[in-house]
Image (cartoon, rainbow, N blue to C red; front, side, top):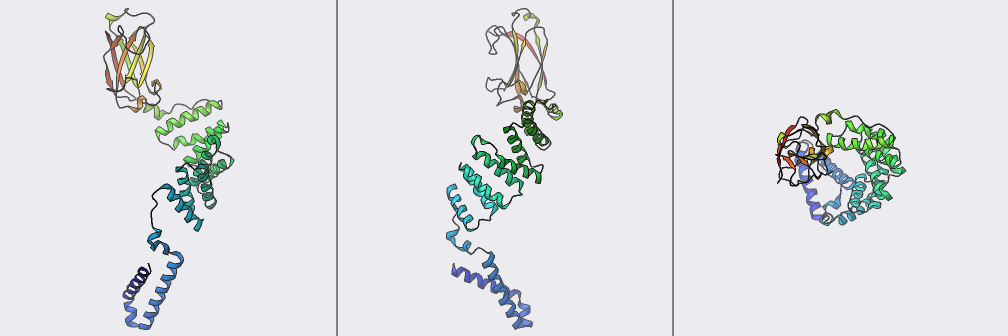
Length: 334
């Protein structure tokens, strides 16, 4: 490393000598003075604010595991504990290892150094909740979130966490007031799930649910289905028979994406399928590009096809706000 530093010094002197050629020629003594002064100043600045240890190859070994990274971070923070991002990075590393109390404490050190950074305050509050029994936000976490929103009222993460903390404390009306401003800030898919949480909080607070979102209604994935019956099959099913209108993924699993069950009374029948008709919370009508529709009269009341049931031919449709289909029940299942 010594040879490297000597070579670096010589290179600096050569560069300075070249740059200061006009001074050399006009006033040699002054040129030497400027050269020496700049060289000394460069060395002093590097010594004071540089990192000579970075020139040592033994100091540049990259960590191979998260545990090694944590060890190196802790060593660096012992050397200089005033590094906000160092404590923040250490907290995230602890969190990734599941060392939640240590993550909470590392975030606390970061907040001490940067008490007015909203994103850091939200992360620190979340870390406190993760490390607590029942993942509850304590008073200190709530104070952090409120302070974050005083600094940046539109900080989404802080506002979301504060609403959760208020719900945990039984303050449903306060949670509603905290969450509702988020509806104008988040994207449509997030807003839909957020509206569900807000309406749950409104119900707990004895409040009416939010009115339907006109944008969501305009973009809703739905299908209006008209079901007719071949006159030749009329009066051939019992009075208590039911009609199933079923939407499935084409060439997919038999479980419906949406289904409605109606009394087989007078025809034609009209029904609108949407996400509320999904029997599976993990797969809704809005999540598929195309469905296969079928209508079936079941004498047994079972959604699964049975011999003797009446059924329509399948029709493929793309769900959308104006999607529509017509089904004719005209054949008997053998």
